[in-house]
Image (cartoon, rainbow, N blue to C red; front, top):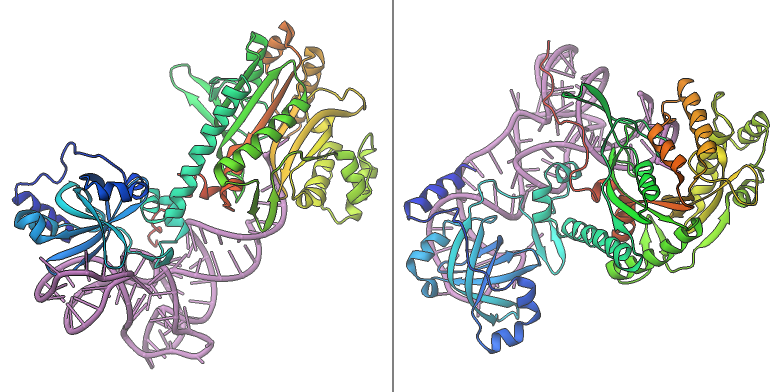
Length: 494
RNA sequence: GGGGGUGUAGCUCAGCCUGGUAGAGCACCGCCCUUUUAAGGCGAUGGUCGAAGGUUCGAAUCCUUCCACCCUCACCA
């Protein structure tokens, strides 16, 4: 770094501003590579900007690679072409500097498409050396691969690791494709609901708690958008969605981040079958536009996202995979059968929790191809409407892919009286020590009392969707700045 | 929280089992080189071996504790 500061001063002594305000730019590397033949034929002068990522100095000439937002291009710098003054500047450049070059295209003896530089300017000096990497024909040496460092220093990661760049490029595409699908094909509108909430709800999770000074009041970071979005349905917006961060104060692992991105959408005058159809339209479309095909590899499985997806009720699945009946069961009997399967259970768990446990232990991991698991026990779903045919169930589904949950949806409960009873039951569990049961949200209940049309809602974990479509196996690989422990200095000895 | 793994030069890693005072490649610095591409050649610099204790004549190496990351289980949609 000291060496680079010295160079910075030498550059200033040459009367060159190492951090100028603007520059000329006519193309990016992608455009040059695409139209190379005609640009070369017509001897078009190209102005490129980018970061110097490799340098091969050979006395009075040099080859280098310039990387921009698209890809990279080799440039050729020759003293006799750029002149003594610019050559002096060039020799003070380092890998990592951002420069602008202009010149015409040619092909080297080794047949690499190259820009012959006739003018060169420094746009921003690099003072902190980048990790050195080498690459040829897609093969890489000395790759900067320390995961901890990648997560903590994403700028460097994005410069140095094309794979990371591609993941986040795709993430952005996925989100804009989802928006386009909902806006243009489905007639939804995007809305924004509070992140800071006086009460939290819409999911079972422990919230983050914060405090507002001026109001002198406790607020929570939202764990879900659900209750607010339904209030908008009551208000007359028939199709709304939100793509935003939710926050859950829980453990973190490969599939869970304390802040994560959720898509929630609600459609009036539809039921949960609408949401299944929506996913069967959206996912193949996304897979093709992001990945080029509906078949992909993820978590060691070959997965095909072509619709339609298998639909199977939770009751059938439990019967088929474990021979256990889950509807209207006596709590202790059910607990006994779970124990026989070797599932560790806690004495205070109710039937809902037991079924949930059975399901995640024995059934989820086997759902590799996209599968809608439908019709859940009412105990697990305080916000879902009871099943139109079967007692004890609600109209709900979750989508499983590769053994993991990707979406959750139900026909929304819009009977305000029943909803109040169910929320009061949750509040009772909460009072009994279940930190994840939600409190009663009076504003939400009053909105149901005004009258919410029959409605269906859907939540999709966007981070997991990105993992699936980019082949990443950790949620940290698809979040630009994942939550990490502090890397503090070790405490001094006493 | 339990179990396993990792941490050595700016980067990627060897050395640890079997203790003797730190190594390679790349980067960086100097010199040579006007179509190279993991450019090449010559030379130089660079490390409190994650931290702190302990054992020992002697610790990167053995032991203990702590810190961070990864995997896994538990918790958790």
